[in-house]
Image (tube, rainbow, N blue to C red; front, side, top):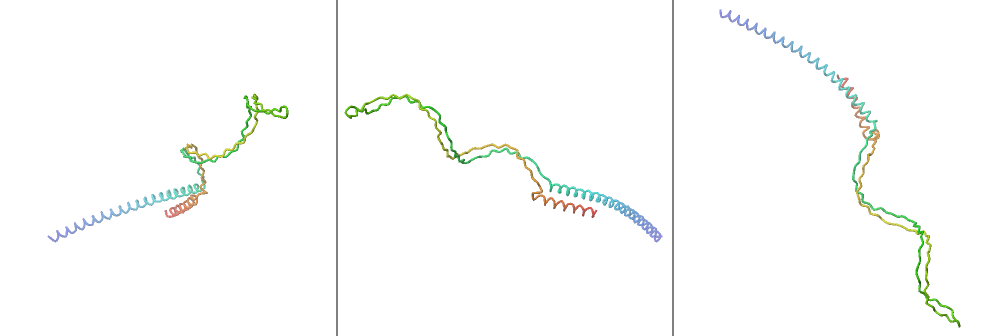
Length: 193
């Protein structure tokens, strides 16, 4: 009877193990199915991301090409106080016109010699009144030759227009090189996806 009981327990245990193995197989098949679905979803997401990445790289490549041939135009506002410390040579010839009249009103004491009889000259003290106006009409040359020292500060306010042609700078070949590299990378990513 013990053998029969052992045989029943063995059969029951084997049945239980069989059911457990069957349940594990069903779980594994379900997990494999879910894993296949997840892998398909991952591949779809990867293809979407790959396409978007390739498109973004191509757009960046086109923008770099546009940058290489563009011109930047802008204004720089300058508002500065600048010290000025200089010696300025100043050399000039001027002609000064003098057009006037000089009044002379005075008496001059002088001695004159008068011829007298017998061949003698007689000195006579005389007071001679002078009352006249002398016209003066001259051009006087005048030369100025100086060095003027200037030490001051001055404020400058202006808007300076700046125009930079990128094709004439070192940025153009760099942008073109990056553009080509991005286009190649976009092709590689698209073919890998």
